[in-house]
Length: 96
Image (cartoon, rainbow, N blue to C red; front, side, top):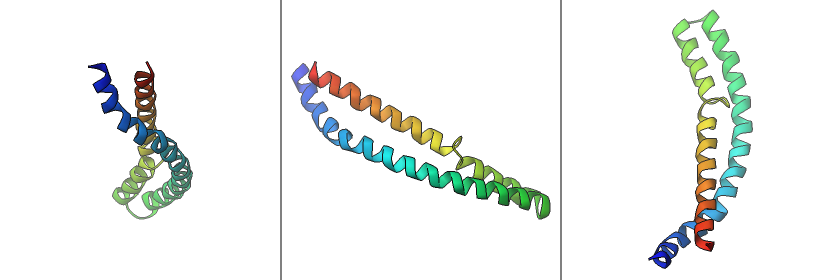
């Protein structure tokens, strides 16, 4: 029974081994770009909030928060860590 589970786990190991480092590389560069965009968005949101419309300013500030390092990138980093943990667990299961 254990050999069948190892045969099932092997394709996932083959797929996850190059995918996790590639996603980590892309995540690092995307996070750097989103940090810059988030700063610009927060500045624009503050100007819109005090100069034009409170509702539109709050919408822009919420969007700037979502693309900041505390928003969606934090969730993506958590998912990437879980994928890496899964890859490690499958490799450990396959070897043992």
